[in-house]
Length: 635
Image (cartoon, rainbow, N blue to C red; front, side, top):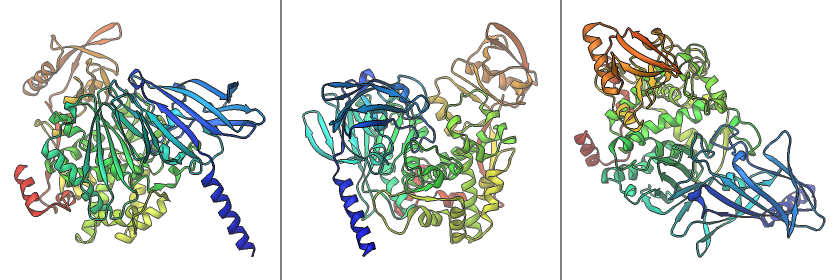
């Protein structure tokens, strides 16, 4: 009887929570082109002290990046009575107010001042004159102490006239320009960004039988930017089937790719259960270099629906937006996702096998000059993620950056190659993907946290070996030099030549005059010819040139990229040093750079002594024989 009474009480509690009045939230986007988002909330309350919270730790951002500093105009009222509020003196995301006796609802008004420049994620530029990406956490306060999964909100928006909106939320009503969505938990709302814009193109994407609907929503600063080449559309159409072939089961009711094409928003991707926030330059699909450099974004964020949202490291599976996150397993969360993004971009045909090999060479070469690998292990970059995302570019070679993305991808390439070799091709990391990240059955959003021990155990189910020792050496230990074991185990070698790397060329075309000379002179020059990063012990460092210095002239001629390239080629032939005139703040100095290697660009070449496992890894899983043959003929 006690058990029955307990269950009945639990049922009544659940029923009461489900039927409780939700917070009503209206976001006015009509001033988004002026970078102002205006929010109004009606919050059910009881009389007495009340604490309202602004979200601080956001899933996917791995840092306390909730942009409370850009919240303005906060007003709290009960009917016509203004209520005084006070920010907590220590927890700056917390606001306290006293609710008068008899009051059952308060109204909260606040503005979010979207930035026009800067780096970051949802706290970075998110609007232009023609579009806006709304992260709901930026425009609301909620009662402190409530679990985001239990707190219900009823959201609605009012976009500018003529704008369309796309989100994973379900529409319940349209009245004029105002759009109302079905009530959802705060957890789901923050997990469901909204993209609105004047130039809109929805593209339904093919999906395997039994899979839900998948739509790519394009919003751009111009109508012209919405034009996609037939081959790009064909590759995007293959992305969903290829990803489902990798993971098997899925964990969303429908999936919406939100893609903002603008030069006035921050460029990044952010994962969510049933959608993704993707931002690329306006002409991404109009220019070949932009199309290539952005090819891995959608696969990366789509994979996150499985690896990050459904299966999540326990240290990143916080129950609220207040608890600090632990990034130790970001080499899985982000590193393994980066690996599968490389693989799926090739399998879907977003890049050719040759372009994918250049991408892997680019990643490996980037780590080769990262001297910070001599003093800090990869896991330390994951633990310091909340600082490294905002770290300045200068000194990154010696400091290290968020290398758990790139180096993590190469570690997982090695794991894949080892499994294939150990099982004579009978098993691969694909089997691990289906077992650990796919799950047995499909369904709606769900979070299943895991530990490192559980990850190792699952790998042992696929191919038994001492995986803990494998990761301890590669993740926890120091590894000076480029981590080339994965590339080499897959049957390829990293080499350098004067032939440009395809991805390097694409990145150069997008870099507004910046020069990546890390593989030669040992520096990265900004578009203003300033040394943005410098490899310790490199030719420029040995010549006495430091970070922040501006290269003014090369061999007595005014600096530009072509003049420097000619000087490097001449030095290779003559053996004479390269003379640079450098401006360091208010001072000019001349330096002789002892470098005779010419231009150096990374590539992968076959190691004929080993099986070509990489080509097997990148081979499509769902194309027809005719499509495969046609793709190979084009390459």
